[in-house]
Length: 464
Image (cartoon, rainbow, N blue to C red; front, side):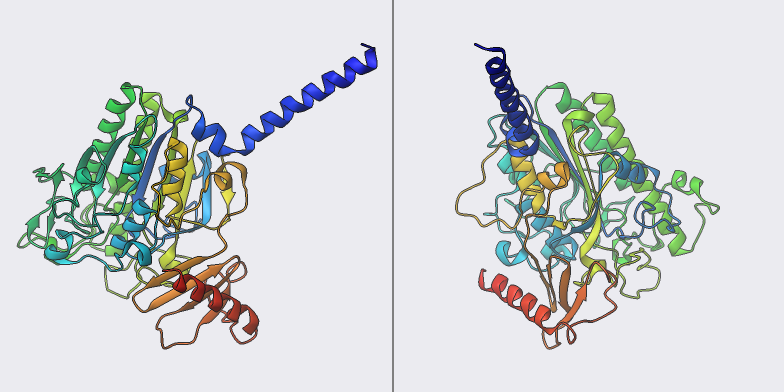
């Protein structure tokens, strides 16, 4: 073989190696999901009604001390256009765990009262993330620690829906120290009542997750930890003991970062301490990954179940959604667009900011892909694989996002959004790139665009 022919052959072989390498980098489904050598642990953490502007990483003017979440935003990706599929607690959680929007899974309203929270809730035929991960060739250990809020009747409890372990509460809102909901003790381990009076719920749930992570990591098999905190949900008088004041609750240590102390009565300032206590607890959970030696092998995703409530209730609606409009239980950006962060060392670029729109049903597809599990047949999923967006800065696979809660409705398609607060109202149109606080209605000046989004909304409706 001549020298030139040998060089051409060597060059072809080198190109093949480079092409194969690039394919592995550009295909998370292959490199992360199908390889038996890489089954990452999965940690999904949710906050309860945290505002889009509560964290300094999203709102530099926020007065709230949240160093660990702000650090997490620098360790991986900060998502600036991540949506919850519903602006209320119950429905948001059902969408996350099922990978489906309310119009498909059927749980369209907040569960209320003892009858609602201890009823069937989410259809028991819905297949949830932990059950899917159990079907992987390397089955995942699964644990849930915190707020359940999608039904607690027999057959609806976490340990009956794919989770090996559960410590948390059935309802949507318990007293942080006495764990009461509507006069009933509401704290469980598995399906048995757990009495831990006086222990702060945020720390209870963090401690349970840390224990799970430590034990399961020693077994050298993958795990899925779902950590839905009940913080910083507002307090409720019906969840208090007789004579107990109805105020925001935080441990004394959370007040050490402020000029005011535990005796402060201002609800807004007390809210700051609640969020700080949540931040500290999340930091402890992240530290436990380091202690277990599994940080690099763990996909972490954090987001709020919906935006802060802005219903003008004195002392309760104090969360910050700046610069977004309105808040929870509406389909305005303040209700649907939420803080979200993803970390996976070596896969997700540190300090990256992702503006591509994604939403909570995507996390079921992410978990299934990471585990190499197969999706059940005959089920329509509304999530799409977000890993190319998170790991490669790819474009979102979503053409549009459909939202409907009560009389509120919205649809986002690329940079545009239509929204209305009552079915009798005309649609309003906003360009979210130039106007994410939804101030300038362009429905009349861009009537063709409005019609396009209205037709897309109808297409979604016709698909149910």
